[in-house]
Length: 141
Image (cartoon, rainbow, N blue to C red; front, side):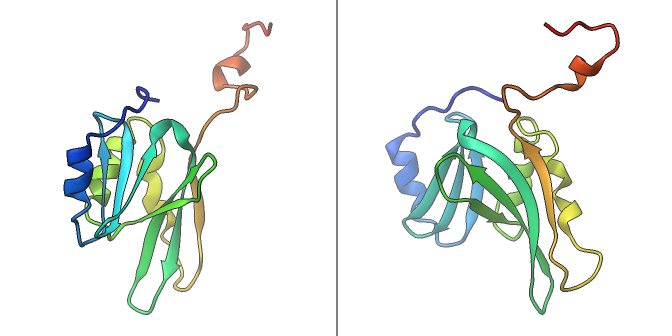
C-alpha cells in the first residue's frame, strides 16, 4: 500500500465541486480516491480506509454496466461505474496499490441478465498466512 493520505487543498476541492458530470480520479499527492457525483456532491476516500474491492454488474436493457465497489472502514460502500469519466485511469493507477483490480472486466457476465460479483482485492488481516509462510523449509515462530 502507498503512503498515508494527507489533506487535499481547499482550492482544489472547491474547483472540483463544480463538476456536473460523474467523474472519478486518484489524487496521488494526498492519497485519496475522489468521486464527483454532481455539483457540490464529492466524496473522498483515503487509501488506508479501503478494506476490500469487488467488481459487480448491473443489467439494463442496453448493456451491462460494471461497477467497482470499494468497501471502506466505518463508511458506506463507494460504487464507481465503468461509465464514469476517469474510470480507466483510476484502474491503471490503483493497480499499483491494489493488485488484482485490473481484473474488473471479469465481472462482465457471460449471460445477459445474470448478476455477478468478483472479489478483486482484500486487505490482509494481521493473522493471515502469506504464501511465503507455506514454503518448505521455513520455520514458523
